[in-house]
Structures are given as C-alpha cells and as structure tokens.
Length: 108
Image (cartoon, rainbow, N blue to C red; front, side, top):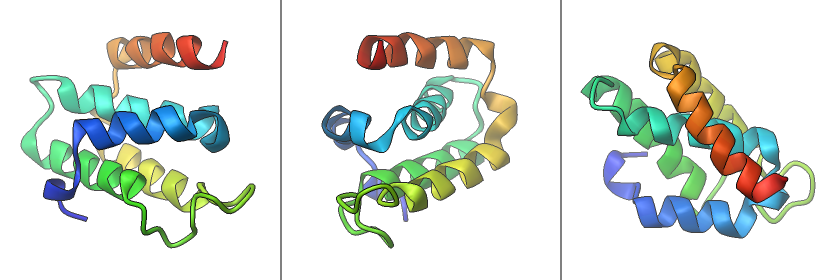
C-alpha cells in the first residue's frame, strides 16, 4: 500500500467504527504508529512504513475481511506489528502515553 491511500479521516473513521470489534491490541498498535508518525523527528522512511501499514489497516479490501468474527483483524494486526518492528525506535514513552489516553477514552 502506498502512502497516498492513507488519510487521517479514514484512519479515525475506521478506529471509531471498529475499535471494539478490532480489540484493544489492534487499536493500541495502530495508535502507536499514528502518534509516532506525527512526531517531527520521525524520519521520512519510517513515516512511509507507518503510513503503508495504516493504509492497509483502513482499506476495505483486506486479505481477511474485518467483518469476519474473531480473525477479521488478524491480518491488520500482522501489518501493524511488522511496521512497529521497523520503526520501534520512534515509538517512545510520549507516543505510548498519548495512545493510552485515547485507549482509556474508548475502552474504559
């Protein structure tokens, strides 16, 4: 997926509509990537990897449809985890704290 297929509005719409169904782990990783991409010190190559994974997450055409019970988000989780492995240096405590605040609003 290319960065052009990613949009902030698409990202937030997908999270809003599917947060409970996707589960906390998927949403947490998506938020880590999103907030890491917002940091000015995250390099362009890392942002490209992040936006590629987030584009896959928000695209309606998945390897496993998101409406499939239990396994629908497993491919999304795999894409997010792969991106996180590549850019983990840019997912710092500040990024995780920001994600945790969002998670608390949605899941607590």
